[in-house]
Length: 408
Image (cartoon, rainbow, N blue to C red; front, side, top):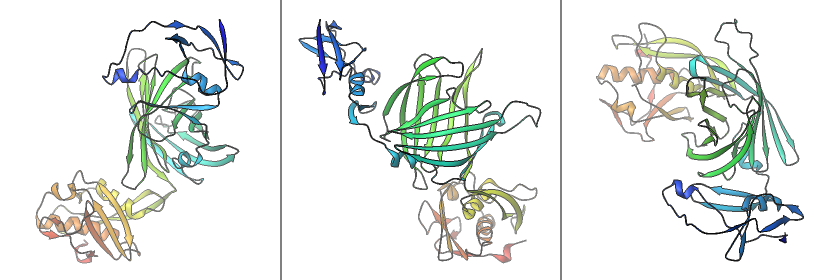
């Protein structure tokens, strides 16, 4: 047999199976001669199969490229394979995580599950950035459980990938203690495979894919990533948001006689502080709004946002009624020259029960709650970014000042 030495790129045949799964069957039955050559790259033997067809030797793209010090990329949606220089993608990947220590996450999830974490350190090394995180899993047993609930997580940005490594005993998270969370390019269809080890020491190959990329209401990108075990039906899925890391997680919980999806999501995250809010909700007669004080965790001093979200959640005490129509979402909120601009989804109008008294109570609840802050003198209600909408009988064209006469 011939011996072939390769110091540069060779002609490569990319065998793509994803096109078949997308309904484009481009397969053709051909006769090839397998492993007709001994393949070496820079004097290193390539152990992956090659084959000879019509006088041309076809070699594995990934094995050869990696021996040449290149990165092989694949987009499963566009069917584009790429060979690129290996780069340290610090900037795009670091945007996915908080930029300062003290950032906190509080998660809630399946069957009263919860855990909280805090970013302790950010360490920059040559061609590497490390985020050290510690935390604890909540104890729903009320102290009866003796399991170790401590969490230790390390996120590492290395080359073009963000890697998670964790040490925990009770966390509702990956069955693998180390895996690639995401890699560049941060575009829909980016695909990669890796061999991972589960907690029992068993190795398996997982295929991972950025299946969705979206711009959020606060102008941040979030990415949905799916991870699938090629040897079973097990999967994991994460939503990773700029500046916040993992904000939601789902996996297939495998039991002896059944399996089903379980998940957790961010309840609140950021620079958290407990603040007492003064909220106003209407009474049963829709005549006055009444004060309800509530202690809440507020992220990044976003107290005005916390007020509106608390109003959307409704009163906690008896004798008071919700003031904001069901299904309403807060799209944006900001303060400018003493005016607080509150942007609601269209459900704020179309889901309102109606009646001039009820409409007035809704406005009194929002305006009086927000003008408790010294920085807010008036409130402008927007609906999907626009002023001048009508809430029943009330035109929302101008800002509303505090309605002290409607406070009970």
